[in-house]
Structures are given as structure tokens and as C-alpha cells.
Image 1: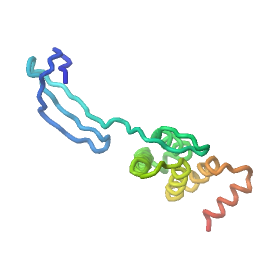
Image 2: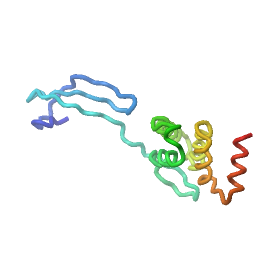
Image 3: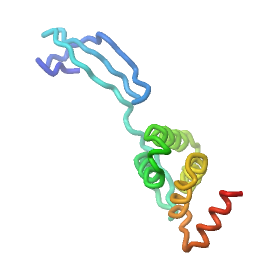
Image 4: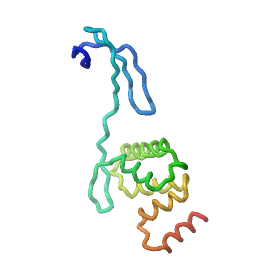
Length: 148
């Protein structure tokens, strides 16, 4: 690690703290040449995971797509950003730990199940796109299923 002040490559770690919320490690370092201190953060590199789309093509898994899709459906006053992020990370772990390639359909179904337990209106919003409702009857049927 280069010192940002004198560019010396010899530094020592003075303090280390794990930040579980951001999945990072904070390190306080001191340059052994100029003695100035600076902070570095270590984060895990993004995972290279592939999923199977509806048309059979392969695509790199993108956690931001999960977050974006859920955010479009939910009322952020009912479901917090932290809950959405935690859910997206849960999906990422599911995809990463699966022995076989995961289909985006599985991700959509897990999202529907999660939304059903959080916010029924968000569930209907997401389902209307995910299940490709054609008319009001489709929406009414889905609402009836929720009520039962």
C-alpha cells in the first residue's frame, strides 16, 4: 500500500475494524517514512455469477437489477432500503451457492414470495410485470389469491 503523502510503499497497520454492514474492513495505516496516517478500506470484489434468462440466454447476475426491481414495486415507507439490500444479498448468496445455473424465473418467484410477506400492493405491482398480466381480470385473480 502506497502512502498518499510521500508514496512510500512501506506502511504498517495501526488499527483494523470490520464493518459488517458494508462487508468491508477499515484499516488505519501509518507510513514508516513520513509517519503520517491514512485510512484504507478493503471490500470483496464483485462476484461473477451467471443466470439463465427466460429466453435461455445467459447473463451475468446483477444485484442492482434485483434492488431496482424491488424498489420500483415497494413503498419505501413500508419497506426500508436496508431490508431491500438484505433481500438482494440473500438472492445473491442463493445464486452463488446453487450447484446448477439459476433461472431468472427462480429469482422472480423468490422476489414475489418475499414481497407477499412485506407489502401486498408491492406484490401486485411486481406480479403485474413479472407474470405479464394482460388485463384487469388477471389482476383481480391475483388479488383474490392474496385474500384467500
